[in-house]
Length: 79
Image (spheres, one colour):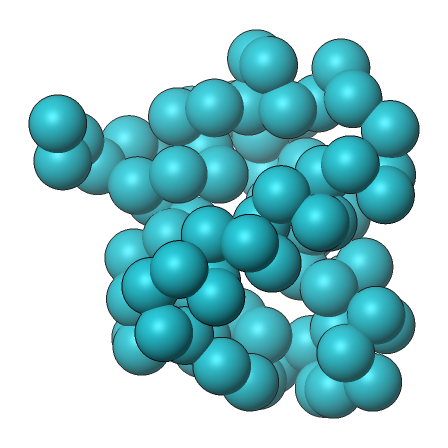
């Protein structure tokens, strides 16, 4: 199922920023490059991160970052 969800509230926005910033730190990349990878190269932000907010935000930082990096790898998205 390929459903896109837009950010609906402050919590989802803060979580999206948290994910982008921490992926950037892990990859030693600019947050802007990570944002572009998650929105321009792919639609992982609106197709995976936002729709799975309820589950993902309850996990630890390393789990969240590793999970998103795995999705990026599986889809051939790089920063």
